[in-house]
Image (cartoon, rainbow, N blue to C red; front, top):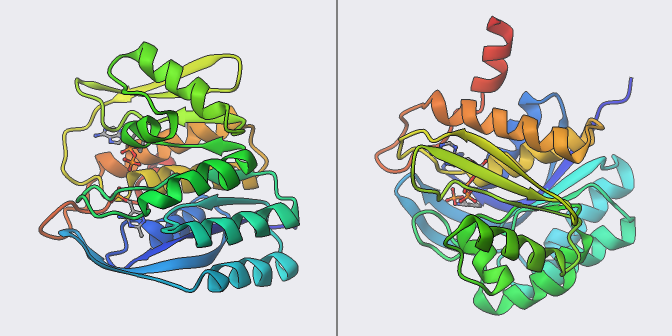
Length: 268
Ligand SMILES: Nc1ncnc2c1ncn2[C@@H]1O[C@H](COP(=O)(O)OP(=O)(O)O)[C@@H](O)[C@H]1O
Ligand SMILES: Cc1ncc(COP(=O)(O)O)c(N)n1
């Protein structure tokens, strides 16, 4: 039996709700063997990011080389990459292995406002990483930065997706977590057609790590051989359950519940 293998290249969240920790929990729940290449260590809890310690760029590259050359990678995701040097070395490793199932979560700013990507690194992300992406998953503020346009309407969102695709990402998913109203819509653009994945908006402050969890679930689906559309659909169901079954941890913006999706499946 061959076990699907997924790699996360991201920052560590000591609070366990986002970053590497969220990704590995998600891989585990979705029956995928999880591996990690840590790019930075954050001192973080539900109240916010207190400090960021980026690792030397070679540390990220060497972790990727070590797992890629031995264990193998069926799919990977990137999260917090922090600076241009890390982005360049990570992109070089991904390209040298020729990995295709690449999910880029262009993490820029934590929900609490801390910067997880230096402004000068945005160009490196567009130039080196987006061309390698099978899927890129910006939230609305990240989509505005990557596309250079302000997003107010659904039409703006479609235009932004087209512009982001011009950087080379095969599929663009603009996430709707920042939507107002009673529905959230994640917009998927595959280079020719748009698909809206709508869900009920859950009123909660416990959404720490939603984007990390969502992109990790997509990578898990790709590792198992799902199509892009199926992997995104399952990731939406995973994050919806994880937000709904809140854990109420911490005094600030708490983590989502990584057990929820699979526990529900066992019950039905
Ligand atoms: N309050 C919410 N209710 C339902 N789904 C949500 C909510 N907040 C986020 N999501 C979903 O979580 C995923 C991550 O979206 P988002 O929160 O926008 O990402 P990020 O963490 O990068 O800001 C998306 O699939 C989005 O639709
Ligand atoms: C290490 C790390 N990676 C990513 C996020 C983004 O998550 P969120 O936007 O939910 O704060 C984070 N807070 N910490």
